Amino acid sequence: MDTTVLTQRIGRVALIAYNRPERRNAWNVTCLRETIAAIRAANADDAVGAIVLTGEGSSYCAGADLKSEPEHDPATGRPLTPGTFTMGSGEDNWIKLLAASKPVVAAINGPAVGIGATHPLAADIA
Image (tube, rainbow, N blue to C red; front, side, top):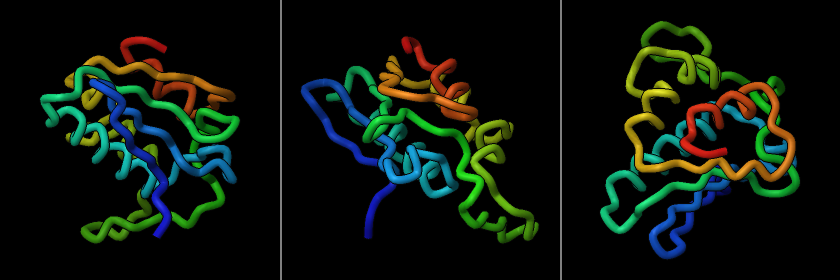
């Protein structure tokens, strides 16, 4: 199964790369969940001193993937979108997650649109 997020450790740096270059790394719920899991794993690893977020291919992130089918919340039946988690008040809130994280660098390697433009704002360095 292909992963939408690649992780690698280089010395004390956890490199987390969005891996949907065919969609210009547009976010869907799977990408968001995998990114959150990767950030949490990096934060739990004492050997990691910093986190770098980037995108595979020629784009950082083209924003929310408007063509992907939304997943649905099993409790409410409502569609889940990347914005549901990004702007929510729960533990998956992007701003809260990065604020409580080890230092985060957003290595913007190409176009950053929509969610892809706002997420780096929560990083320590873009």
